[in-house]
Figure 1 (cartoon, rainbow, N blue to C red):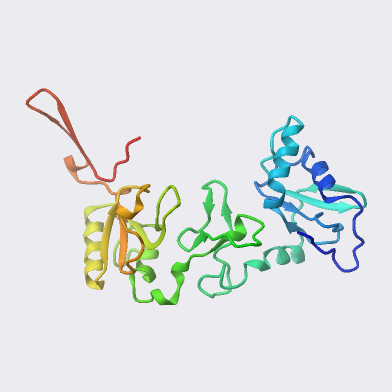
Figure 2 (figure 1 turned 45 degrees about the horizontal axis):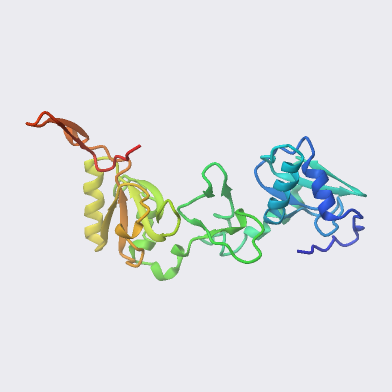
Length: 280
């Protein structure tokens, strides 16, 4: 991709690839795990930074690995001055910060229309978009970073109003009608099924009873999951707008229903465990 230099800023004379190679070998390149390049296409130090994570990722890995080093776990900010580029960890000034984040304005990232972006952030610790209740990875041509692909889920569509998919009590339980931990929408660990069905985790029998009573009052169907199955269609395929999912991952059963060990007549033992347990 070619980026035009800022008006009035003289274009840099060093090729983008040479500058990138020089910069990624910089000993200070150990910041946030993403890639931002301001030198692409000949931009000067007066120009604003332009993110180019995907464009540089493969090249940076090759260049750093070829030099015997380790690919830096950091966000590299490149600034051109004359024929050289320096890596900087400086926090951009207000104008630069505004330009960097203005792409997060609009319906793709502001899910509820309050003017505050809900999406557009990537969690490297979790390996997924931040704010999973509202945001999901939806790549489009032109996305230069994982964060830019984190858009408002289609589950916020007005067509879901009055259904389980659009029920705020299921998306973010507030404890007034029932207690449960919100876990976004039902998907599978392999990420090949991503539904709009709210996914909540009641913790006690009382919580379960309240959730089921609420579902009955609204005419919803309840599906049960133990964990993020690879065959998610067994739980729900996401086509029923009035279905939501209860996970038993946080549920604690009373007494022997949580865990029990029974001696069998043949001398063997039988274990009874809470359905939310996961085999490790």
